[in-house]
Length: 410
Ligand code: 7TS
Figure (cartoon, rainbow, N blue to C red):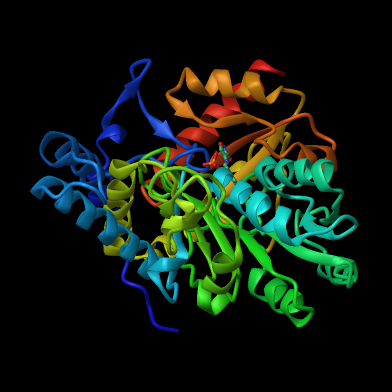
């Protein structure tokens, strides 16, 4: 295997101004990257420059600034296309985030092409945003939701998944990396099995894109959704990748400006892809900021990021398992750098509050994946989710603080 040149994490950290902040007089230890990542200076500067020097609406002005903003907007779409290795930039739709991307597919594809009694197959480890929209569709048109089970390690039980993939299933929607468990699903195989039965597949990539290289053509997925803010970019911007053949036949999700070709009271015709799905003034700054985030992450290299985070995960797992009474929830063989756990009798929120006083930011709760909590029979977990700017020292600090928590609850 080709060896991957390592990066210097201290150099990387200098690119993220917030990492120099202190909380309660302690250095910020930011371990909540699954909720949202921090932003490099390059992204912050891009947003500041846009609003201070370049702001104008796109697609309409004939003046210089508007033309430039339009150009930057288009160039960002091209960056996303390259980033996901999509066949065309027409297949990249800008939305608010993963949640909106999934809702778009449910409401546009689902409402149009699914019929009462059709089944949609998801997994037991989905985020609520890949459960609730389907339940809403079930209420509205009578589709049925089927859930593929997971084992005690938090891995999808592939044999069961295949058994559930019957001819009644007309859509598969699966998470690439679980936010509550860290499990990395074998989505390429899942897509292949589904396609053998002509079933389209959506992949929720919210927790994947910043941590592992994604190639939508290699995966073969029909839809892929992610959020910019979990990829070093701004909040309020995300992406739905959809194969052209699907997007072409799907009706618009929202109506309004920019998504039309011509409007009369008798008949309206819709714009070409991807504009058909981008009604109204989009989040221009967000799109341009996302482009800058992608430039940054590509300059570091996702293969290097992945290798580094895997090392950190191994180190973090060992350190946490040394803490008395700690039980990891999510121990899949293929895992992203997410450490979810329960600590003796201590409630996750109490753990979180005590850690906060040490400047350590983690998440406590159900992580918008309540069925995962039900599966593991825990009310909540404490979760540290790592990024490539985290360090071994931060993990040591985290493990030490957990030891202090166990003292408090002894
Ligand atoms: N899918 C997964 C797998 C997620 O982890 C999240 C957010 C979403 C979808 C929704 O993304 P959004 O940007 O549209 O909100 N996950 C988390 C989390 O783990 N902590 O806060 C948000």
